Image (cartoon, rainbow, N blue to C red; front, side, top):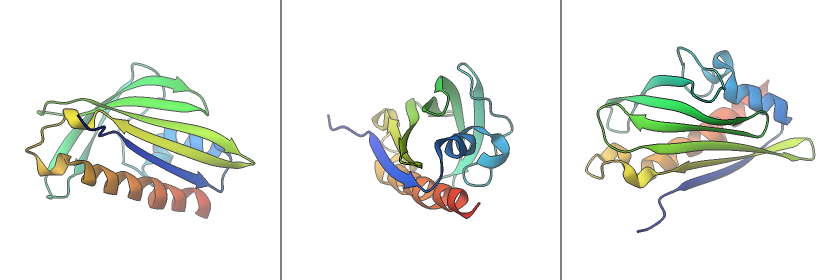
Length: 143
């Protein structure tokens, strides 16, 4: 079975503490990610949000924080209400001489139903590439 894990790396002209805040503070997240009702970077914390797929259909995302290492790593499960499959999103941060390298890994994508066009890996690639390399980059480097 092919590895359907998604990996994206991006270097931001911002220190780690600012990138970490963008990843973990609800009021900042809504400016580049999703507008979450609540978010706490604590293992066991659950959150949800609605996102629109490429088809225009809305999907309720259900997530649970699995691991938090402040200013280093944030991992949470990612699944869809009413659909099989469960995946894991991991953000890892590395200092690069005052800049920050972020590595995003979204694993378990092959567990989602293959007959749902919104769940094909290309859509995840496009979505995460936009979120990390455009939305988050613009947010961090324009403030």
